[in-house]
Image (cartoon, rainbow, N blue to C red; front, side):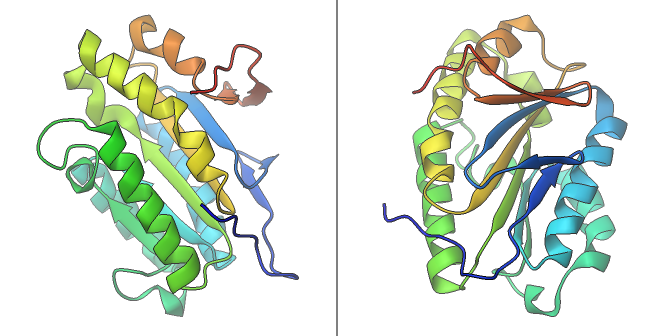
Length: 204
């Protein structure tokens, strides 16, 4: 896939919880409860909308509705329609399109989405946030293996365009059976207000 870089002079500065991050970064944010999640997601996406960045949120339906109402005030005039600056999708739009998790299909969907946003709609920066709380009831050994395999393959896609991706996992929902292998799938981990480089990162 051809690399796409931001146009010269375009503002691409991005931060997560006040900490600078770079295009291509794939972060794992470990938080506790919906209040902390909201305090992280809302400024991240609102700042992006004000900067004219494409913002995509993947979340459970109830959470998606709440975020859409909150973030609508920060939308730009170019945000009307399905290819607007603010886009919100639910698991059934990709992760669970036919009722079962398929990481390969999801990666294809996201690669197509990026190509459309950056080539078809002249995007110069994208912020993507995926709150994975919806996966709590699905935790089984086979599902965990598939999810970890998927997470390990996200970074190359993110690095193909000027994008920052944050996968969010609630420590009140997920235990060590998922979190321990999950951490190894991310080069950077946010937890407790700190963003740390992960020395145990494994490339898929």
